[in-house]
Length: 335
Image 1 (cartoon, rainbow, N blue to C red):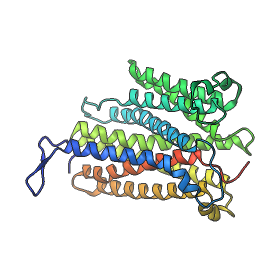
Image 2 (image 1 turned 60 degrees about the vertical axis):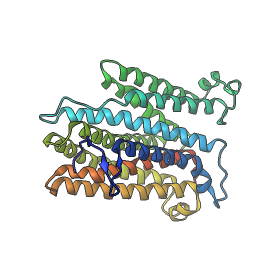
Image 3 (image 1 turned 45 degrees about the vertical axis):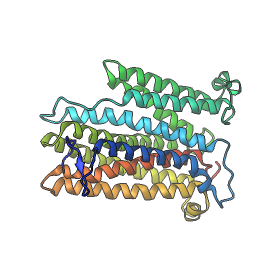
Image 4 (image 1 turned 135 degrees about the vertical axis):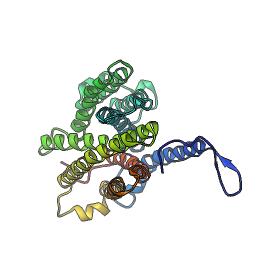
């Protein structure tokens, strides 16, 4: 198969024609609706029978964090793959239309929504009068929320400028802010937690967002050696990213759930159940990545690796959604 877009309508056995673009748009819409349903409906399913109580606004926070993480993936993925593409010999000058301004806008709105939740005492505001903007400066979480809002705003302005690569600095601020938010200063060994989260979040965003932009770039380039070379470059880096994501994820989980309790907590706590779902999804993604890498190295046409890669990027999207849900659930261990 190739990565070029068909120019004629596909015809089924009954003789009727379908527009591939319309079918693809419908599939994307269905996946988007399912992706939104997971953070909105997931907390009640994860908490069922655990005896744990969800914090107010858990559903909304899970959805906002999912959007924030997805925006970060798109932004970092474009920068990462853009750099890889420039190193490919004989690469076509054509490039896919940048999604960075739209991703930065989505991240800004999500960060703004999360900041409004912090400004109302971690409650979902129902009116503007409930939001205490000045109170954000009085707390650690409030300052981090404001930093993320400003960082996405600056990233969007950088994306529109003549030097979009400078987005790396505000995006780095988002990653560091998330690491600080996830690990309060009262936690045992917070510096270790900061470092693990920075590496985990950065590598995961490069992996998921990078694959998405690679597939978009190959679609723009069409079949040929440059496309195979770009896919090969990404595959080599992705292997390292997968190893880093797995190592930091396991280490972080062991810090939250000691080995003696982890088996019970994986089934008896909402955090553990969601973490187990994430681990299973990552295992599926790893299998798909191995399949794509095998095709890339052994198939007569290396670009046939795009078939499992497309499924992989959908699975990675589900990982991002589950990760957003995971951050909104109560931790199984109180520090």
